[in-house]
Image 1 (cartoon, rainbow, N blue to C red):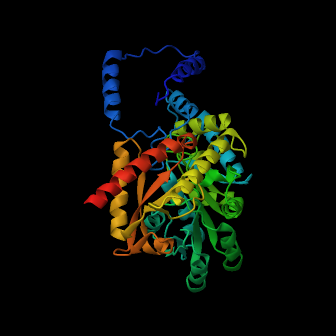
Image 2 (cartoon, rainbow, N blue to C red; image 1 turned 30 degrees about the horizontal axis):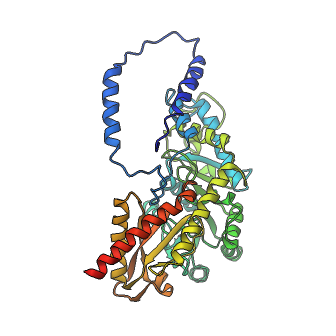
Image 3 (tube, rainbow, N blue to C red; image 1 turned 90 degrees about the vertical axis):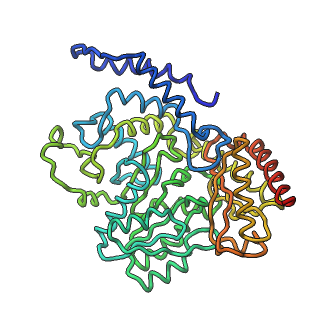
Length: 455
């Protein structure tokens, strides 16, 4: 069975308990045409079959991880209430759960004192962090590495903030020497570091950048949308582990529970170490915040209506799987890292491939060895398509020449980039599935190279 059905029985039991909390109210009749609903629902099920098999371990492509059963069930259960976490009037219980869940995330990074909330994802979370940065340094530039997510440069345009890209080193990390040069010549208010880039899973050298902060006094924002949870993993490379250990020293952090946090889309989170930045959110709403003198989450968020169901699901998941080193949740992340190391070793020992980077987290990127950059790219695309025909779903990443030139990927550069194969081994189950994944990759690569040689 690919999709879990057994857990649905638990939902009905929980729904009966939820319903008892409202048994003092008069009954309301629900006029529901069950047959019509069933017909449409079955039609939806048919349409939804036109999808890649995201929950299955043979899907190892993009950053798509199935939510935990507890997250699905808690989210569905809360929909009978459909809370809105903008104000306590619309999401009393779910707002309390959000505050507790966010506090657990902050504690994972070493912050007892913080300001934060959930939002729709990393884009909005980063928007808020950069907006606060602009308020604190209104005339100064923001910088991120040229392998950081494109959202930073785009959001800076939205916010009217000058943005500069910092070149990367050969490991796709922000080059500290290049950053230092920019700090000496430009007015930079905020440096964005990435804890797990989208393309390669690279982690910027935070410890070294913190040393520069002591000299130049810039604000530090950590985009940990993908990699933030790996702070719980103990078996990381020393430099990577050191970077995660320093996260408690940055000014703001973004993390996406809908990536490695086992949550449904969309669930992002923005955290600020200094709670006083909440003053930038101040606004008057005489018709909204009247039921309580407590802080309403809408008073510290740029978004207005937000799904309380996301908070309920996150709280339930963290209740079942606490965010502690050595716990079940952390062990799942460690299994993903182990799977990446095993695949990396197999690729490294195979003359048909060139591994571009040693994986820092659970993302593996590799090129197909070829005479030219164009040939390597074409072979990668053919292997990508051939693997998909055998139900192994990988991803592609187009990487620039300066990151790959020292890797001996090709003999001749006839273009300035190479299309590489990429795998996000996000599921703990991937560790047990590396051999079947490798068997398919090995077989389809042989077939593609044989066709190439015969053409």
